[in-house]
Length: 209
Image (tube, rainbow, N blue to C red):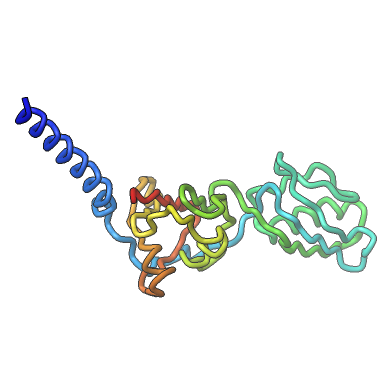
């Protein structure tokens, strides 16, 4: 009877350690992310819902103002109503506003500057798991993993940073890569500071012990 209990306990311990080992080494199944990733060469910021836009109409200060892109993707301002803004660059939106104003003002000249930006949903970078403040972050050109971690306030005390992964869409296919956040934040290993691209998802798992 004592022998059976011993064998059962032995098998249970082996199973537990096997599961823990599998979880701890799971990140090794994902290839490491190249530290340097070429950002889109033609990248231009695309306006999204929630963006705060500075609309300057030269020579017409009474029309110049700050507008916020509504959840439906449109903006409204004096002489400009229900104008779609989402999915356009600031330059494109400025030209569309000029067309609207041309009905009332001769040769309007408009400049649109993005103040507080959120960006379109498809380009936001998402951080989930054991980040101090998990959230969606607006993508900025040449954003790095360090930039992203500063924005979310680092990791919780329960995080396993070196088991973190980044999910990225490449040529229409979703791929997953391992990253080393512990090495970057705690050891100052700059080689772990990989580039972030629009639409990336950073997953930070919980440590087992």
